[in-house]
Length: 317
Image (cartoon, rainbow, N blue to C red; front, side):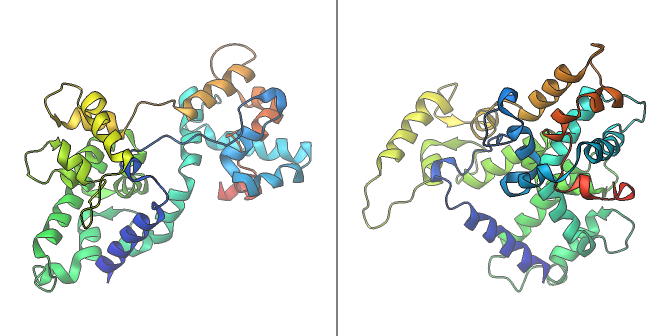
């Protein structure tokens, strides 16, 4: 039953976050692209690991310079989405972001056929709803203990789906469906992430998060247990930093500043770095010739994923 699978998946995701400090579980940080310091004078470990991870990075030396350049040229063709012969900052940035999300996208691809019932390459809302909730919809959720919660879950899914369905045609492409399943990865879905967070924590239904709700989401004492020091620290953070307008509660804007902090966009920085180091005619865009002329940097950067893309046949790209 898809609904049970969905709940199991959510439980698994929660289990995987146990190592995250309780007070950090709501915050969506932008992870860096590598554990290495980004210093090209000492090699390209940062760039390489950003795509491959530590284990896959060991394949870096498996390719000859000639083979690397040939395969890199094929990757450049894929990055040039408008086929104008130039790689713009936007195209390079989108490629890097795409590679950052590759594991998420692979997971979506793995389960795509379960939702795309009519095999038209799209997942309509009705397909997702019937696949996930089908049996329970027929029974009006009568067979589940918490009927109201399941109805709320369905309404929440529909709202999120509509936000992800950019062209509002009721049918999600893989990109849109990925945004539906992983809204924290997409800028246009941030308001949904904020709204769902408020709903999760707001117990009195006023659309705001007060101090006790904020702390209650992180810590519930058992058998007269005293609050640990970190909870006291969070009370201070709420009053001094989270509650910007000092009205005693967090509204949507304040919640957004808390869970979606403005941080360095590492993919943007990397795209700018590659263009700066490779753009010989200084027109702020790259040709294939310029990239191949500086191929060694791209081999060690996010523009080529040796462990995966460079070992695929060109027709698979």
